[in-house]
Amino acid sequence: MPLLTVSCLSKSFSSSSGASALPVVNGLSFGVEEGELFALLGPSGCGKTTTLRCVAGLETPDRGTVTLAGRTLDADGGPRVPPEKRGVGLVFQDYALFPHLTVAAHVAFGLRHLSRVERRDRVAEVVRLVGLAGLEDRLPHALSGGQQQRVALARAVAPRPRLLLLDEPFSSLDAGLRHETRERVRDLVRSEGMTALLVTHDQQEALAFADRVAVMQGGQIDQVGTPEAVYRTPRTLFVAQFLGRTNLMLAEARGETAETPLGALPLHRPASGTVMVSLRPEALALTASAEGGGREGTVLSRDYWGHDVTYRVRLPGVGLGPIECLVHTDARASFAVGDVVGVRAVEPAVVLERVGVPESGADPTF
Ligand code: ADP
Ligand code: MG
View (cartoon, rainbow, N blue to C red):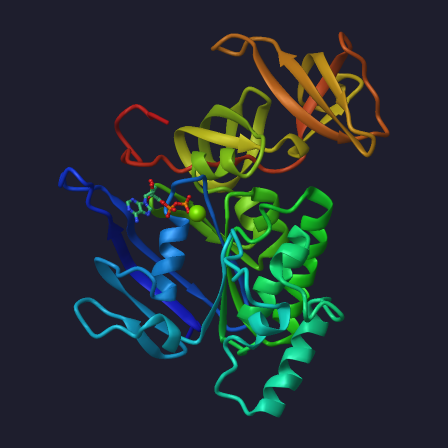
């Protein structure tokens, strides 16, 4: 059984005009395993913070249940466990530090149940774990943004919560510090034996941080899976596009293969009829000619990144006129704008689900 189970969670906010509001979180269900780092990933406004606040008990769901370690925290119409009794730690985007409290006082905040000696030892331990030793007596205004973030983290972690809730905790840090802080948080969650639920709009962050990612839009989850699974085999058009650049093409599927603008390609799952397929730029390769299979095209542009290169290649018309595709290769093979090249797929094409359209019958509307 997962450590945290959220099922059929819904929440709407009534507007000041009293108009009936659309749900911000709409029948959301997911589970987080013990020891897991789980990310809720989605664009701004899709309901991530609201979901996290429902788990924390800071928001009352309209419907749905939340259970943590076998204990029901929220149930439809049932009694609710208040935030401070849930055994969860929270790190907010803005850190929410108290200006008049020192680093040590922040970390000691949730440790009032311990004896003075135990509390002192735990504060020293956690301050060291997050790399703030020597700064115990500082006030927030005398700390850098990165240090403030670590105080918020230390405060949340000190009482050893079963579940750590992180709401965009790295977004106000600059790029270098963000990477380092993310690694530190990950090590800390693992070494303290905690489970973490991270909310972020940053694809790279979710993919790099989490063991599993739930991709959200409009208060619902489109797909849950490992970073590799959601990136390489997106289930929907939204997931394909939200997680990075991709080549989208219409194809005629016949079971295991499909006729695509790049020729006949294997599919990652059987399908039939007109489907939309996704091929990531790195699932395509370029050769000096189309003799090794694939289609002939012309290089339109070339972005050189040092470690690799992205090409935009125009393919001649197949039915619908010329198409352009993105090809991401290592920097060893080098082509110039105007070169005629062969483009071929080196991975199966990923069939996207038609959302809201029956699998057979009507024309596909993607
Ligand atoms: P995210 O964290 O994914 O950016 P939120 O959960 O913060 O999204 O918000 C989702 C939507 O709900 C937004 O449109 C936001 O304006 C609205 N919303 C959030 N909290 C409230 C509230 N207390 N009252 C009214 N609307 C809210
Ligand atoms: Mg938010």
